[in-house]
Image 1 (cartoon, helix red, strand yellow):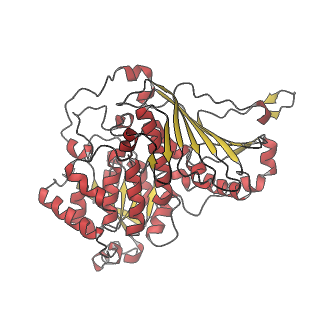
Image 2 (tube, rainbow, N blue to C red):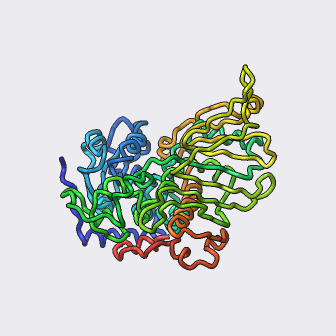
Image 3 (cartoon, one colour):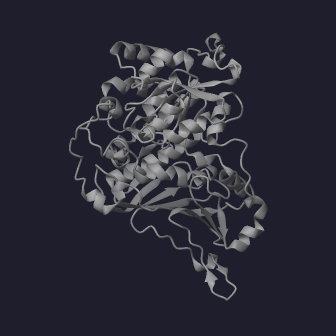
Length: 479
């Protein structure tokens, strides 16, 4: 296996200088328009190719990178990962793209290969999404970032500003946002089916270690230090956050359960469950977040189970105030009222089973109920006789391009993305507010205009999170 290029302080300084220049508004020529690309891949002209720099190669990247390259337009020229050995599925991309140069530090990748890279994928733990994304954007690179977009509210705010400032193509990896299910939801909205929604029940069954009482009992406080894999650069893995002693409870996957590094279940699945409703109903930011019940709440790991209520203000005609009720873990069984069932042939009412994951959208009139699952799932209307009435709007018609393809084509100047940071950043901020409520376990009032909590300094401090470590501080000044 190729040895990743080692980090060097002088190269990091050059990288900071380069990104600082970008922040001053220097114009960048995309790599695919430079003469250096003309000899590459004679099957396509330089103007029809996208060279990728991929930050994070294993885990979820085992699907993201093949998705971005499936159409034959994009191909990786550089890989960056803090550990090329331990992460799940890392060999999949290394074997598929053996010629991609390897780096442990993405700043080294940009320093040495920035001129050859057009677009960047960021598939790393939540707490390092921001530093990788803003660094790429400041160099004029288009960016695809896994969900949740950022680890903190303020990081999302900066990335939304950066999208406008650097004028690059962006996409967050909530892939269902570009799908037949998403297109159906838009038509339902246009047909008035989603008018007057006043309540949304959203839920997710337990599926991560911190939502299993037996597994959770094995971790008291922060995990004890364990021998670190030789292949892992632990300092880089920690990025802007505090460096705790290494434990396999953090890397390569279970980091999601810790406030310091992840977003818990709401940060993970909320992006797939409430995304359609949040964007298309224009919910914006809530005015109140109330933890109704958090089992084993603490400030190290996320709760065993969560029950949180969000209150969103009215947004104009047919958009009344909405109460969003999020439940995760524990007893997440959701019941549908009998009046939304359908009669069976022998008489009893058949009540739909909403399943272990999804959302129910309630109208003020109470005449029917809309069920939305997660990811790319299509929506249903109960009772089903209403769905038949709305059959034209309910039809499933896939978009021209999927979520990955739409990003690559947008990088080529063809169309736009469905979940750019202007859309996904606001959704992520709602997720961030939910994780703050899980951390503090207090009733919170929020001013969506000022983007500040009302009368709670500790909560306001959590909007930005702990100050970043010194070597990453410049990233927070880029936009």
